[in-house]
Amino acid sequence: MPHRRQLSSIPAVSLLLPVSLCAQWLDLRTPGIPRTSDGKPNLAAPAPRTPDGKPDLSGLWRGGNRAPYPYVVDVIQDIKDEAIFKPAAEAVLHKRLAELGRDWPPRHCLPLGPAEGLVGTYRIVQSPTVVAFLFNADVGDDYRQIFLDGRELPKDPNPTWHGYSVGHWEGDTLVVETAGLNDRSWLDMAGHPHSERLHVTERFQRIDFGHMDLQITFDDPETLTRPLSIREVVNYMPDTEMLEGVCENERDAPHLVGQTASRGVEVSAAILVTYAGTYELRDAVPGMPPGFPPPYTVTFADGQLYVGALRLIPQSETRFQEFDGSYVEFSRDASGAIAGLTRSFAESQSGFFRKR
Image (cartoon, rainbow, N blue to C red; front, side, top):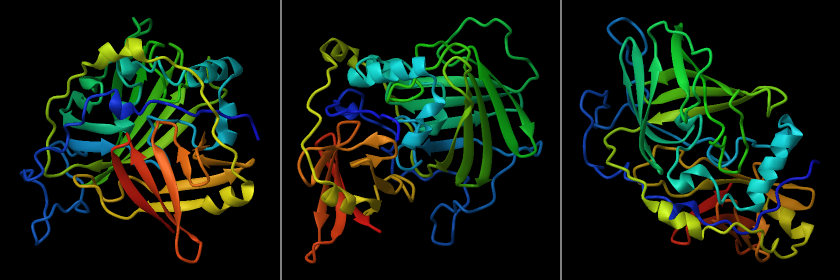
């Protein structure tokens, strides 16, 4: 098994970024959407269409349901897939990991990355010639334009944070090609890099009223040995609204001193292996769609615990630290079997996940 990240102490992202404002007007009924007989949004209703017969992607959407981690944390979900990155790109990754993500662009009020549609809350506004994305991101409000007027991608573009995007319809799927991205953004919070040769292909297909399939493929001959694809089901957010988001925490940046601390305590493999399994949140998160957050899968490999491709750092026999600075505490029932785990987010929020 290839060598993988050794992390121990990363400041919780939510302490560094603005508070999300996407779920404030919880009692606001979205007008014009299908509802069941009891007045609840009918997310299983057929997908709407525009007057010209195209699928209508308009609405308020939320990504970030891809198990075990949302896109923003790590594009690699299995440690054996890390070999897709070339050695020079892996060296950049390990440097960023050792510095605890100190220079992650959103920590400096800069855009999230080349595929914001996989995570967070955003509104899609659609017309026959352009599709606009209005992002309500942790780094502040932002926007992106996708042109459907037949123009081609620029041959020698001036690199930008969002690049240049053109789209076309293949049946009911909107296919978007993006190029001309600068190399300052990261593919994820873990620190996977990309070059200015990155080409991104997105495929949006609205499955029904409340769900949209989104597939993103990264093709970068300078950092990848082959294209890397990620798939996400994005959820419609009914009866809520976006409020203004402003990033003003760049003043914290000088105080972010990246360093690799203790690698945790030693815990026997006999104990660690009992924690492996899939865990589901017991209580729904107010304002979030069903199934959010996704199931939390812990695997045991090479004498260590992983969530996806990132190691859990043991702080005691039952308490472990995650990549983003959150903590996981495993608990047992009266018979000694693993009952579940409690995840603590930013040391202030928690949720109990039952073991399947």
